[in-house]
Image 1 (cartoon, rainbow, N blue to C red):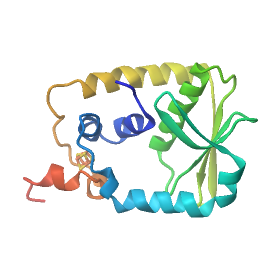
Image 2 (image 1 turned 135 degrees about the vertical axis):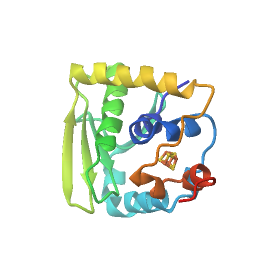
Image 3 (image 1 turned 135 degrees about the horizontal axis):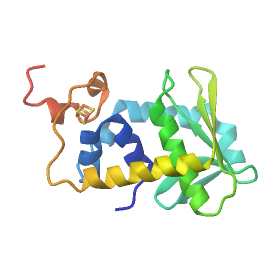
Amino acid sequence: MRITGTHVAYYHVCIRKLWLFANGIAMEHTSDIVAEGKLIAETTYLDRARKYTELEIDGIKIDFYDAKNQTIHEVKKSDKIDRVHIAQVKYYLYILRKHNIESPKAILEYPKLKHRDFVEWNESIKEEVLDWVTKINDIVNREDCPILEKKIICKKCSYYDFCYIDEED
Ligand code: SF4
């Protein structure tokens, strides 16, 4: 299976979500949260779309890539900084490095917070990512869906109805 940035993000959010997504049960398109994210990306950085290129490579899609400076600009709609976002861009950096981009880096942008985080390639990212890849492959190839582990984020998850259909609350 070709691993994408979405697999990496879901691995860090919830392994049940990862399994459901990887096994073809996709409900994300119905989510208002995704729609809001797209709206922010489309309206907040209009100028960016003119300056940078969209890059699709080896299962990942980067909306704003500055080829001259080998820099990914990743816009997040979130109003809090999340380790999942860092993990996702680390995976992007790994893929770029794998394709001979010498010193890839990423700027994570949070327009709601007016905040930016910087992530630069280093060899420890490679080890981290390869560990995730092994674990992701192991999870998605399981026969059975991982059990439901109730989390705070469940209520915002597009699989909420699916997961909680038999639960009291
Ligand atoms: S609703 Fe909760 S348990 Fe179910 S996939 Fe989403 S985050 Fe995971």
